Image (tube, rainbow, N blue to C red):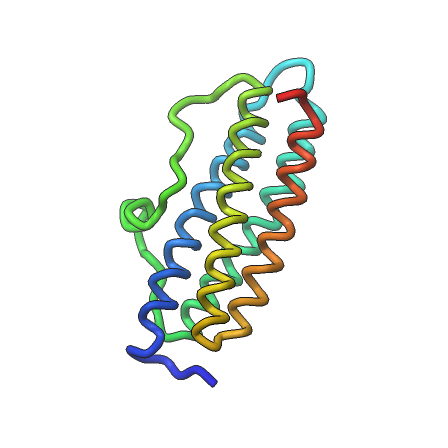
Length: 152
């Protein structure tokens, strides 16, 4: 059983990094949803929506887990981005590059979630480990769907 405090500081730091990367991927997905253009507009607009909604829910779950472990959530975008390793989109790419960009980000985030799951399990935190494994499952499926949408 976990208690808030110093014994969770490594878990909180690792989860905060996952939270930050998830935030970047969420906003990138939502931004692409708003800005996609071209012959695949409608299908990609809908697909991106089906992905950003679970990402938003994921953010809330990760944040609540951080709080349950005694941590705090970054209060500014600046602090959030300091903890992120996945980069923001610098510009609005064309549709097939949006798909490739998100596919790559989803695979990277899925790996981070699996690494987090392994770390949490090693720390004896099976709740976090299970949560991260479920998130990686969604991200790998989303990456496959994106890859299947275009020949990349």
